[in-house]
Image 1 (cartoon, rainbow, N blue to C red):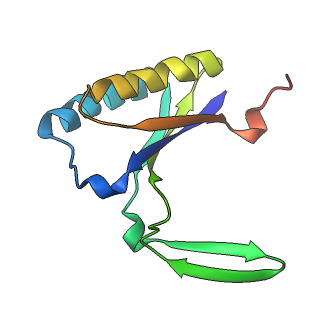
Image 2 (cartoon, rainbow, N blue to C red):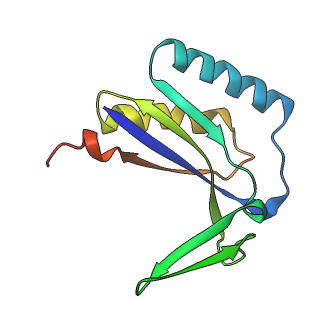
Length: 119
């Protein structure tokens, strides 16, 4: 089953990942790719470089970033191959563990619709 782990971060901290965090993250991503649990991952550019498109009552509007009304934004994602939601949760916790205690990161885990199982 495939799960999307959306990585939410505060964009306004100005914090950049350390060389050690990047190396540790690279090692984790290599391990997870090799064992088949990480299918794809990427970070996203800042919201200042993005746009929002909204449809309301048949009318579309476009807003330029940054999106100041958002406290937390999706800063990246990981597409996981997991046996269950519990397995996807364990994989996501490994990702968060790499960040140590100096970061505030939140991940939302959602199963891809085509892989959903009825409860």
